[in-house]
Amino acid sequence: MGVTLACGWCSARFRGASPSAGCPSTTLCETPFSGVARVRGWLLIGLSSVVSLAVQAAEPFGRVDLSIGLYRIDAEVAETPGRRAQGLMGRERLLSHEGMVFVFPELRAHCMWMRNTPLPLSVAFIDDSGRIINIAQMQPHSEDNHCAAQPARYALEMNQGWFAEKRVAPGAKLVGLERLPAPR
Image (cartoon, rainbow, N blue to C red; front, top):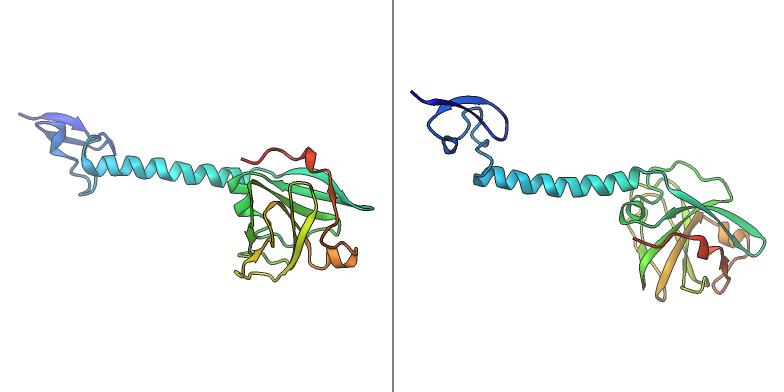
């Protein structure tokens, strides 16, 4: 007479001589220490990492007041990998004084694109000292890369044409960056 066992993965009950007999409920389900269960465990660990990034992106963005000359900017802050990846995707509109500032952990020639972003935007790439390096115009839903002309620490996205309308050009200084959180 066999013993009643429970599958360590799906909790299905079955009769068998040992846990290595496997679970009869499906051909993929085995005991927790078998190869398939081990692979499932690693997949769950990987999935939890992806979910963690998604949760970071889903958390509300922090905000900071920045300025260029006389112009005040209410900027959402993207300082984590998840928030930088999310950016302004799916956003239908920005008020004229709103934008998003991306804080990068390393100084380099970062690039931006517009995947799943329905707004036309302008992006200013900014160095460590807060000076604008270059400004690029980005079209909605485009996967074209728009890159910093020199190593940048920050990028500021605004409604398309905002920098030109305000006569803000490369060399202008962005004030308030010291209030940004450290990049993660």
